[in-house]
Length: 179
Ligand SMILES: O=P(O)(O)OC[C@H]1O[C@H](OP(=O)(O)OP(=O)(O)O)[C@H](O)[C@@H]1O
Ligand SMILES: Nc1ncnc2[nH]cnc12
Image 1 (cartoon, rainbow, N blue to C red):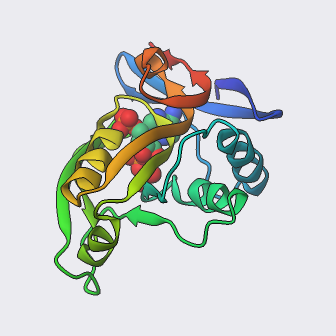
Image 2: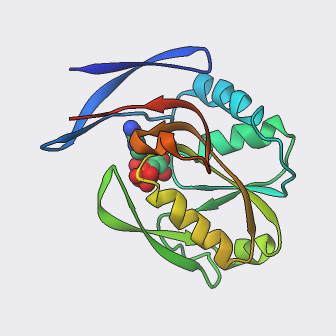
């Protein structure tokens, strides 16, 4: 299997190259289960945060371990997660559609109405593990703003492809796309 060697937060990881279509492949970056990378990546991203904020907000699933570790860096007792489906325990959920580079079909991104009420008027930092097309981040921002929150920063461990040219996000490393 072809791989891409990534160095991030002082760690080396060999990422498998996964084909998405005839002319597009990605270096697959799956943070879930990688305790060391979540902790050291969070430490490095936390160092980049120099704005006042109230809460962190991420999207299920791969952003969750990262945001948990970043919240711990700040001794912050709470963070928020937008889910990929509506759950029975949610109350008046805010729902939007999301596409991402890894998912062919449209998915939902859902913020529990209870969380939305708590985020109203609050300064939030959006966190994800990777930003690629930017669709996931845009959907998360839409939900945050629908809830009445003010997005004050947007961070990810990796900016993939053209996302690395963005000036409205902070990230640790670039990740190439492949033909
Ligand atoms: O900028 P984009 O093209 O939207 O890609 C980035 C998104 O893709 C990944 O999530 P994925 O959709 O693979 O879902 P998962 O975290 O639930 O595995 C990643 O965690 C980001 O949320
Ligand atoms: N390279 C990648 N690996 C895993 N998930 C991703 N989402 C966007 N780009 C990704």
